[in-house]
Length: 162
Figure 1 (cartoon, rainbow, N blue to C red):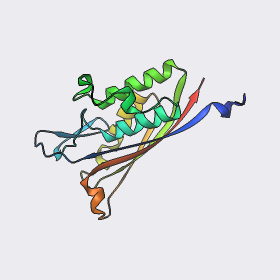
Figure 2 (cartoon, rainbow, N blue to C red):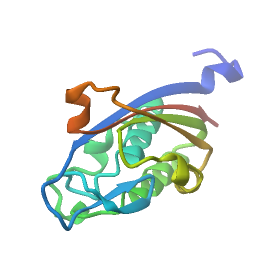
Figure 3 (cartoon, rainbow, N blue to C red):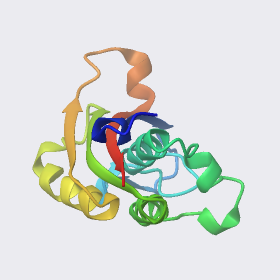
Figure 4 (cartoon, rainbow, N blue to C red):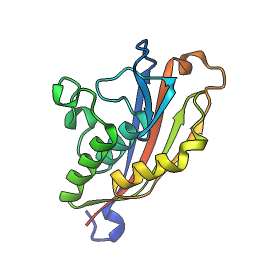
């Protein structure tokens, strides 16, 4: 590998998807924000697709595997886990290995609830936990029925190794 500072930059891609839950007591959590009046998502943890996609993007950039390797859904320790806490833990582990987040960018696909009113809080929650700036965009399904069966999120992360 070259000694160029650019050789220490790595890009990772993350993706997560969860289907809508039939459990009326399950809350929707996105970017660490609870949407109490919205249908929740099925998942072992709180099913926060935003935090999960950022974790995968950061781990991918560092060549450190994926979220399932760090926080397996077969481990009862992570049952109902707060995904912002999981993001914080993953970022701390990567920092110990010399990795720093330059930035991450996410696109979340869902029709409701609208994320714009909570975007700033979600970006703050994700950025604080990840240790670097995380931005967020919302997109609608545009009537594609398969996309409406849940929520999906795409994330890219730029990391640097010191």
